[in-house]
Image (cartoon, rainbow, N blue to C red; front, side, top):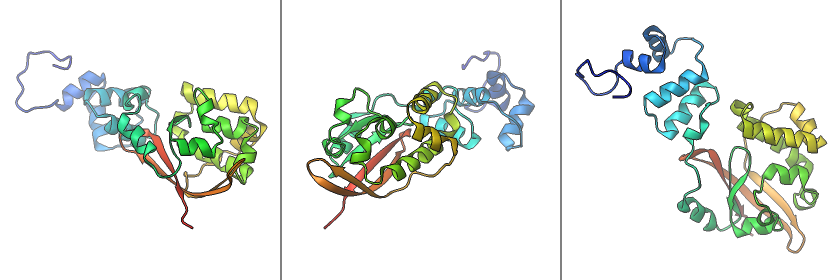
Length: 237
């Protein structure tokens, strides 16, 4: 039974406070203070043990670390792996361009409309990343209207997205790469601005189709808390 001895009979289902503390390798007093919400310093490792011992769901685990304002050292446990076919179908069935971003701003999936807007850049990449497109692709200033303004805001949005995960390998790798390859990213990253990802008008200049305008809406997926569904809605005439 969850690594506990079988010497004591259970009167009620579930773990007692003493048992949770034992399995987390902390004192009962310390665990009681955590339960009571006292102002105590709890390491990310202890939060991870608690999530494991209490058999939290992926959503519950992610919510716990969000409330604790620390990064999950085992954040992979809060993910569902590859995108289910239902989510891919949702993206494909969107009337306008749509795509799903992970927390590194990798495009995990996108539809043909989105590929067209970016002049087929995503489909030519093995692992398309929106930040790499903005700051490393020489076509970006031609495709994205008001490119420098959008680039500046994207850095602040990205910093807000990954604030609790700066020390994790996948995040640090993309940041180091962009700092080394783009003076503009380096400049705006040093400002340390953070903003929430906003909706609103998104404008593009396609080499064949000309000026394109969309209304962007972003949803955070309840079943994949690190993922965002971004939809570019076609504006009515």
